[in-house]
Amino acid sequence: MPPMVFMGGMDGPDDSFETPLWGENLRVAGVDEVGRGPLAGPVVAAAVVLDPLCIPPGLNDSKKLSFKRRARLSAWLHECAEVSIGVASVEEIDELNILQASLLAMHRAVTGLKRPAQHALVDGRFLPPQLPCHATPIIKGDGRSVSIAAASVVAKCYRDRLMRDLAQQHPGYGWETNAGYGSKKHKEALQNLGVTPHHRRSFKPIHNILWQANFTSD
Image (cartoon, rainbow, N blue to C red; front, side, top):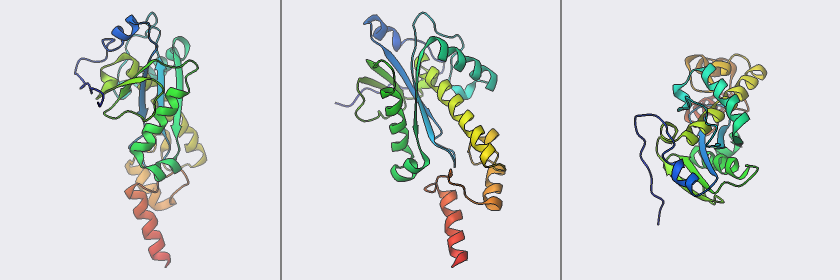
């Protein structure tokens, strides 16, 4: 029987999903990924096990928070929660497709926890296969569950930092501000500077550039 999928609400995250599980003394991990849409860089997932007595105020979907607020919350979570990061590389994205790579990154985040989770609350409609614990998929979970919101914040801060580091190695694409998404500056740089090893060759804009380059070279 497939797991029940909870639809997201409009009031922001709370602990209504966690409370019954905490009442059973279960270790609950919120799980989310970032980076499905960019043209470059890996997809990154986080699993966060919150301490019910130390939940940072203001947790929300990372996309709804300012850079400074995300950074403060991420630092707080690394101090008062258990955090694990999972990454799926550009090569894995191209080999598997972005959905399967995202699920792989989530699986790695959950299995990377120092102590196993007993229940995972996972953002989205799909669950990573072969999770080592029970799990519940929650559509728009980063705006519904504090644990998933925490994972959203941690994953985005980690990936944004990674893309800023890659921007130092490959200047001109604007990754320090666009995080690898297809901004105007990024697309112009692709035409002028070409494709890097960090670009996702299975994504249509990159595939088309490579095809055109091969066509003209022939």
